[in-house]
Amino acid sequence: MARISLEHVDKTYPNGYVAARDLSLDVADGELLVLVGPSGSGKSTVLRLMAGLERVSDGVIRIGERDVTDLPPQQRDIAMVFQNYALYPHMTVRDNLGFGLSIRKQPPAVIAEPEPVTVSEPEPAVVAEPEPSFATDTEPVVGSGSWPA
Image (cartoon, rainbow, N blue to C red):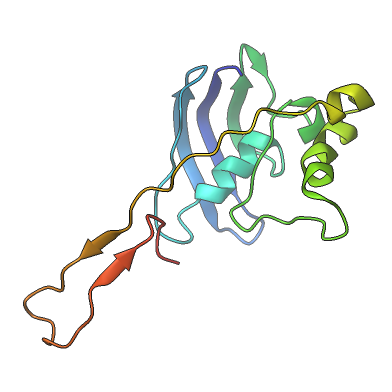
């Protein structure tokens, strides 16, 4: 992995909608970036800009020290996992996981190499007691730890 840097990045769509304005950020090698905001605030657009799936209107995107602003996605060596992921139903789990490697023309031995599997206990559900303003017959809410849709 390498550092990702956005320098004064703008994204304006042809209809005039501004999805990102003067965005500058640095994500260090190995650092975790979390983009949080309401629907339509530009989170997915920023990720798509980094991956090269959208063109920057202005500004610079660097991966490592390399300016990738005008490079196509396949030359950026970056991947995205979508929240609503798509699996190929006709493929096995292993085939779905190996698909990206085969697209990158990895040797069959690398694609077939078993990955260590780690199984951990799920975290216990958090039960929230109803607020006093709720009706007394309201059931407790069980949180799954995911952001509400």
